[in-house]
Image (tube, rainbow, N blue to C red):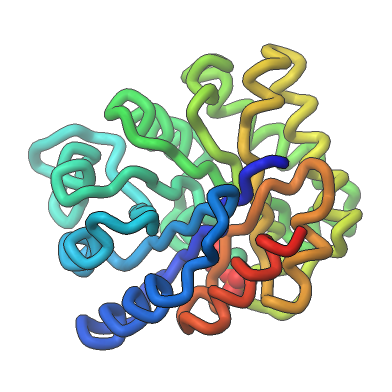
Length: 252
Ligand code: PEP
């Protein structure tokens, strides 16, 4: 039986009281199942307080992005050592909103990925195609280029502790989930691309699916052979919705 990771990306939502209530709700309902790992990625200002709240529990903590720089004159940025300092273990890099809204190129995403690995934290590398790219049958080319930028910078060994998240842009926040088979096909492509360089690393890499995952579609997705869990946006903002996904995972 393989492990399944259910990761919540809260994006720019919540406040102190609401986030604390959300964490308390998740902690109260975490499935009693060693295989199911749960992770939350709150906005930066709430990382420290969330770290304190989940201390001693099995709930994991991640950040939504990071600077590729280690310190210095980078106003508004947050470094890996700062994330470590407040108790983060995971960092999402290359979320499609970072790529499209903040102009992060695949080269910039790769630099962030390297900073996370060098800093000893676990990167969650997001890759995904737009609807136009899918319709033009360019999905594998786009995902391949996004992954290649990282492989070229860190080598396959750099992926040894990493997580990849396939998030079709057309499925994020739209209610249009990829079918289990559509997602499986891309996950298999990603795993094969890593396997071409190192079969052991490929077999061990967790590949999450993200894009309108809910309690009622999670089991179908997570039961596919190359889907090792989910990166969840909207449904991670309510404890019951997030736990419904975790419960579905536990039932596989
Ligand atoms: C996301 O933000 O990464 C995401 C997958 O969002 P949603 O679950 O709302 O589609």
